[in-house]
Image (cartoon, rainbow, N blue to C red):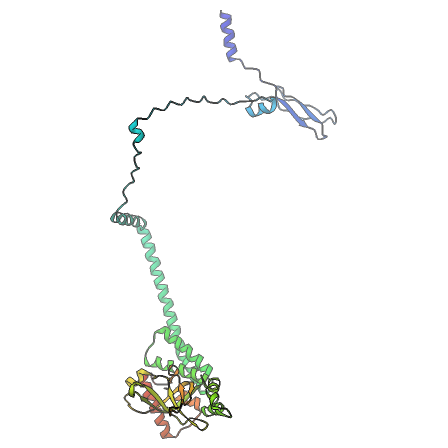
Length: 375
């Protein structure tokens, strides 16, 4: 009885004999060396070339499942847990079978006040004192930079107005009208940036309009254009020839203008001695030009005016005793204000009394338009 107890105890604590552990390696000459690992290291040699190799002893630890499958071909089947038997479903009562499932209750949506309060809390949590200070610093820096930039641009504009006006006046004296228009245009853009609307700024803008018109004036006189329209052609083609030879041409007029408003027919007639061959022409506007001028001017009835306008069309007699009419575009009409630009265009020299009278007309037109004195 004592011997059996001892054998059982030694059987429990004794180690089971481990299965053999093979090894396999290939020599440099191509010969395959194989065998079983021992408890101590081995030095097998190649039978062909005599090369000696070192083989580790057998592993004393339990061999992993994957190696056992690879070495001995053991098939390891994992134990599946026993499936629990499904409990039989309890039969439904009649009331439970007919009773619908209760609807899922949704939480009430927050009111507008609650949403505003939640947004306020989020905003307060986001706007920490440090962030507020950083935002204030960024705002101050941005506004300061914007003010400095605007101030520098204004200073640049102020410094460019007077030189641009000087270049425009010099170009007018040299009769380089495109250069004068460009120079005065630069001055006008600087004045617009500065927001100048005073009389001096209006004078620069008027110089720019006059220089622009001077650059577009017809190279032929009015008499030459009308002679070109009327020479050797039938009267039925006069209007077509005028459309191709005279329409759109810019002309400067120094003439008496009279406004006729009787009978609901408001017309502005220009008293100039134009004719189309033997056919006399009456020159008038297609509409009343410069409405503000007629309201502010103290002169009533016919008046001498200096202006520029484009020729629009030629209206021939229609058999009702109406004369032929040369119609001017009122939308293009510009009152002249400066003696320097007018003299550069006409290249004329006036007697002292004529020049004085002309300057008075230009002065009256400047005052009616609110344009300042020319330098």
